[in-house]
Image: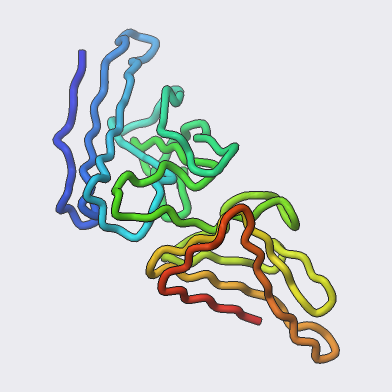
Length: 209
């Protein structure tokens, strides 16, 4: 038996012109526990928000708790080698699955997440390569990519970072941070974009000591 809830969007306060639809199929109902297949569809054709990936999804279909959770399928996760993790109980927050919130279950990507399909958005992202640190995306919040000093390597007075991708969308900010050096040395932060040239329309880049 299949069922669905009314779609949410595109005009809700946090829908950003996308449409969210939740459906489910009943697999079995017995004394050991009820089993459902749950499907979350997010139509981002007219998306007009600031992010470019969906990195966590947290639907709610019951008011209590779950015996077990399993991911059946998901869109490809951006960033080579990344994937979607094991679903956990709880909702989602700005940084991903929060682990809190009765009746919710959540899954998040180990990379950037599923790309928003709106063709008017160019793919952006800041991703470290393996030259100086473990490869992976830079922390991102409120349109700000944060580049901490421990992700780079110091050579003399200069701090270098290396990226497999360094692409900023309009309105994005990249903030490089570093500490003051002894004996009055003032380090310079340098970035090396690899594999392809960086895209930085309307660039706003901050270097902080």
